Length: 141
Image (tube, rainbow, N blue to C red):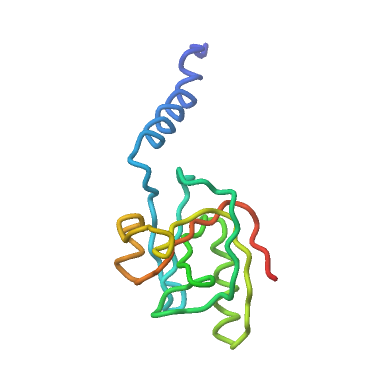
């Protein structure tokens, strides 16, 4: 059977169209809210449009049922979920876990408003800051 050369390009073209559609949105990121051991954790898989070259560090804690690093609720890249589950397990055992998380975010202290935060986070948490983790590995201090 002879394959038509244009047909073999179709998945690539479709991917490009989806990528362009994702880039043309309003700058928000699709965020999923999940519960891990009763704690709200937020993940995303599509790279957000915010700058992702900053670092946020601090102690990982559970505040009002939401995982925070320092004073920020973190929206984790979805491939960090295993690490996040380990962090939550450590917190539940009383361990002090300090994390450095690459990425970017918004803070009420720096002039952001709730409108800058993902709606999925606001449904479950009352953050003063939201941090979007980059895809880089997490580091413990």
